[in-house]
Image (cartoon, rainbow, N blue to C red; front, side, top):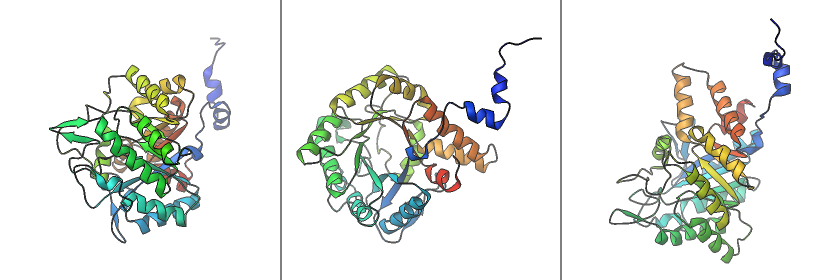
Length: 323
């Protein structure tokens, strides 16, 4: 039988497959998340996220320095305070955990690009990302608090602000506050299409940020919607976002693809905690190979159109030369 078209010819050997491959992972486009907490000489492994820990500032510096030696020079920083209140005031305290960590990183490791997450859920006693009144999450009163948080991060040395709360108008409010404070050169990486997802479970253990009542469905996106994601992305760009994000990544590859086709700014994807933990669990149980799984997932996210990826696999990728 004669076949004029035989796609298998281009799969015949590794060298041919490599020659015709369409997607290559650029490790320079990977961002490593970190969790920093108050205290001294602390390292608390996160049970649901093997290989990831909550650490105090001096251990954070050690981890960042060790990672930097392997090539990691971009991080995303989350803070875990020792006290919480209704307003989440620790999030904008000049002596808050993120602010102190930023100053130490910039003092000792100036070659690191530090992106700081701006949200209130880790800092509020109720665990929600905004101000609460009678069980309702208040949008506009939250914007002033988020702006104060962003400005305090910039003053402490943040290189990029990443609001993750999903309040309407927060990018514009933060942009206005940064510009008024003399930080018009600080870019905003907006969590633009952030879905209300079951994949966040391990993160909530890590950050202690689970809501004390209800859920986040009134402000995070419904997983059934794609057009709404486009609307959110375009709104954030109109308000001043320099980079937009889709979160989570693996169940939303179509949204990443749509975002890449829609806009002319960089698109980030967050390979979230639950996606990471699934890989670790499957590998531990012997159901699949961790390296192949992680490489396939990261490649698929780039193939979908992401320009950069936040991933807990970043450290393993760099240390073990997976790409």
